[in-house]
Length: 154
Length: 344
Image (cartoon, rainbow over all chains, first blue to last red; front, side):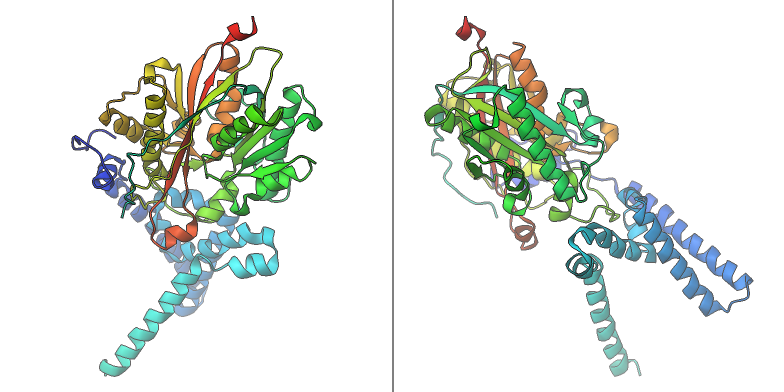
């Protein structure tokens, strides 16, 4: 904690925030990025392998992609349920949040957590507390992009 | 922005005449049992739910168990207790209130976040010093209930900041009395803190938010009692954590008060590094567990004769954080002494 700190003669309310910022341990961006790349990449490789497998089994390409996504979502839901996915997320960060598995985790985790408040006010009301903002903002941005495309995209 | 209050006002220090600590009882969770102080707790549970069907009911049962355990251990009966006071971190302090509903005893619910345990001792000491014979002070926290109220669902894969802390699971209860037949520790003084806000907004860095409050209260206590840190065998803060504890030491030394090896933080001392709590424990359970187990034993074994316990609390709620407000904090200080001579 000491190493990266300037020498402060006085710590007051006015310089406290910068003092705390310099004193607090930082997370290593390089380490985080490498972990995110490895875990995120690994999830994508599994998805790609699944697509290849389904094509080999005789399904068409579009059907194979859809099925691969479904399998990944199911796997993430199961690993969330047995308490593995959150451990992955603690060091993988964006690597486990960004792929479709992260979305599955974001819906299943609150569903498990709020089961104790019942099916309606628990699971029903709280299931989308984490994923909800993503959906709302995602749909809003999609509408804006679609409008812009319709107007200027020709 | 930081709230500019005039801190040239002096905080008063209260003197207690007759406030004896009969005994204490601690109930800790499974992660705490695996931690550094695991063998000191009176009871540790295998499961976060303590045999109940929800975490909230489990926390409640820990409070009830700590309360009954302390009453039994102190050699008094339920009907001797004139009041129960305490609080916890859940909304509407349900854990304490619900645990207390089985007792036909007057009850005061308190809230000062993680500083609630020391707050309850400050108020409890006032009651036994003036009006009552026995008072039970109970407080604690629970990782799984606090996490979902303040942060995210347990199974959500979120990245944890390296300066974050881990809410400790457990409950501790202390029985105070206005008399004691056998030698025991006494609460002799208290300095009630004020709300201090230095403008920290990061809810993952509550140690930094609370350190200025702890510094404010400690300096007032030392000043009012004309003492210095070396005069105490132990100066203990509640849950500043490793980072908060370091900042606290830095803040006091800039004001000319240097803390020595007799300083410790409950939260920072509870876990091993491989338990991945990063900066250590947080929550009302830190001071309640450590004080009611290891520290009370050391006092009663005459290993500590004079100490300060500073309970620290971050007073924000999820709503205020989402609205972008900074974290106001508080710290209360009690002085605990053990003088065997008094009984000779």
